[in-house]
Every structure is written in structure tokens, then in C-alpha cells.
Length: 197
Image (cartoon, rainbow, N blue to C red; front, side, top):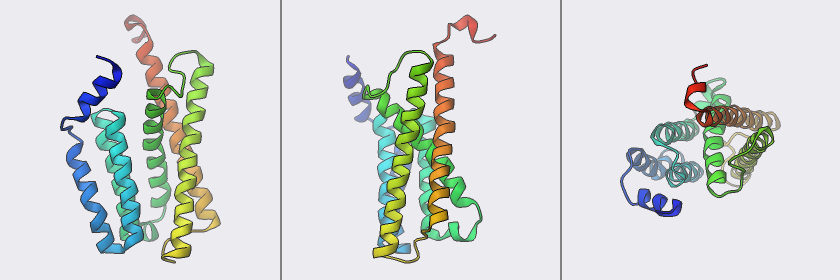
């Protein structure tokens, strides 16, 4: 069975994280009822992230944990928690950046767009490409916030400092996750006897 056939077989069955994906899907119209169209659109992006975690096949713990981070981040926006809890926005961007880094890294490796083997240079390449991809996604998110503020609702918070802090948090979260993933994969490649040293 090829890698694609194995992946396709997993897509046709119920996974433990699918129950949470149903919650994310139901949150899309609920967010629209609670806070309007822009909130429903943000929740739809969250559903996209939840589905991407499934399609890429990240494993049960990352699947459920990643969905919880993305869902909580979206609901914080819907309920206005970012405006009332200091630092919550930065924490959400750090956590979301980490989740997206693990997702993007897995996707790029699966598509053979990153070197899966190699020494330090390959590891640096994987980290840099992963972080850059997450920062690009963060930039697109910030542009979406700006468009939402300009065209739909002035309640969507934007501003120079907010945008820069959010992008920095996305990048730092992505960097931490990418470095941890590299360390973990390097440890997994070690011979069994050398792991305990």
C-alpha cells in the first residue's frame, strides 16, 4: 500500500478528533448569531484549520489539542474576551502559531517541499520555511482583520502595535514549535541505545 493509499484509508473512517470537528462546524453559524458575519467568517477559517489537521494526519493528541487552541482563539474573538483580558490576544497568537507550525511542517514534509533527511542545513531549512509560512498566514489574517474593520465592523480591533505584536507572537510560537519538532524528530532518528544517554 502506497503512502497515498494509506492516507486515503484513514480519511474514510471516524477519528477521535472528529467529534470536536463537529463542534467547530456547529460553531460557525452560532458565531454568526452571537456576533455577526465577520465572526462566522473567522470561525469558518477555524473549521478550515480543524479539517487541515485531519487531512494532514497529525496524530490524535495534536489533532485534538490543535483544534482546542484554534477553537478557543476564535471564541475569544467572538465573545470579546480579547478586549477584556490583558495579554490573551498575545497568548492566543503564540499558541495558534505553534499549532499552525506543526500543521504546516507536516504538510510541507508530506508534499516533499521540505527535505525530510539531512544534517543541520536541512534542519535549519525546515525551521525557516515553517516559520516563514506561519508568519505569512499571520499576515493574511491581519489583512483580513483590517478588511473586516474597514468594510464590515469597526469593532474588529486593528492598529499598528496590535498587528506587529500579533505577527511577532505568531512567529515566536511557530519558532518554538518548529524547534521542538526538529528536536523530537532528531531524537526519534537516534539508535535505541543512544537515546538514554
